[in-house]
Length: 484
Ligand code: PFF
Image 1: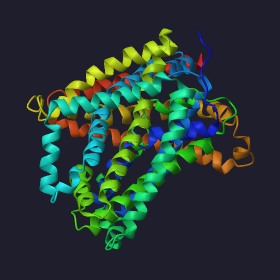
Image 2: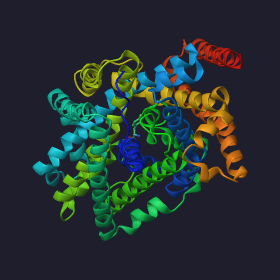
Image 3: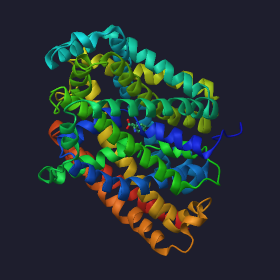
């Protein structure tokens, strides 16, 4: 077997993992869900979710990867020896495959909008209605959709093709600073606009009345997606680390950068939206329908528009490569394929699988199942089912099956100074990983699938019970086997 690739440095790993975490979730989704759910109050709840669930699960994932030096399937197999847990690793690979297929569709919009910005289209869009009809005419055109989807995909494959150090790490070292600088420029521009204060108030004034069970669940669900947790992306990246890396501090840095970028994007977007008198409640259309009008009407809007869509596309690209890497690592480790072959074959397969998602906005828009297009269905299955389910099982696995104490011994490699003489830190981490994280994720999971209830009214009770029975049996059996 070829020697396993490794990151050139811890810094390179942190940048690549932050690149995975920072994506459409931060720049497209976070600002509008924060805006809809109480601004600063929501951000506060979100920070708590990140700290008590996101961080422990992230540490667990990276640790599993580093300890086994394997993709998620190999990692679970090596640590458990059980078929059940190996299959859970397989779900991660499947999730990577599915998420990439529709993530690249949205990233394709962003790529296309980069060209729209360059062509100066935004200055012709005077109102949100015009912007949204322009958006609809673009996504309604199959050639436009497939074209930019393809371009984005080719870039993603090219980076992964070049390898861990020469592709992903080098790419992140170029793209992440670009992303950061552009965001700072956009934020300064936003704040300097007349009337931007209202945008800051909107984002920072806590509206506690909006916080309820539902918004807490949204915050927790988003914490998972935005940190790339629950499907082994960071496990795979962790598998290219050597034993001397300090995992807790690396995880803290990744979480910090991810949160910082999301908040900076919120500031950049809402200051500009308020200063130009647009509606902040644009929801998912906030970027494509509202922001384009904002760029059309502000001075220097041409260049800021171009910069913004470069930012969004770069952020999406560094996330997409981590999704493809999960699938590729599996074929390299488990099937003995060369990286190049795995990238070409699997890249092509994911690409083909994503075509119906790209066509869900035009040719296949009418082809629905319970009012959900193909795009909606795969998004739902991956984001609402596979990710929380995966996160739940990863935290259960590390804390209960592998065993917290054994995992802790491995975690101390490279992090001796953090844990030395700090029993309180250790027991806090233990409580979070063993109890708080699984329970909270389980609640999110149940909430996520109850959305499905109305859609598949008939079968729901049976399959949920069936899945739960299989999971509980699997956990019990694999625990018994490990004790032997
Ligand atoms: N974290 C990415 C975002 O916020 O856009 C999305 C993502 C990437 C999720 C990679 C999962 C993953 F494995």
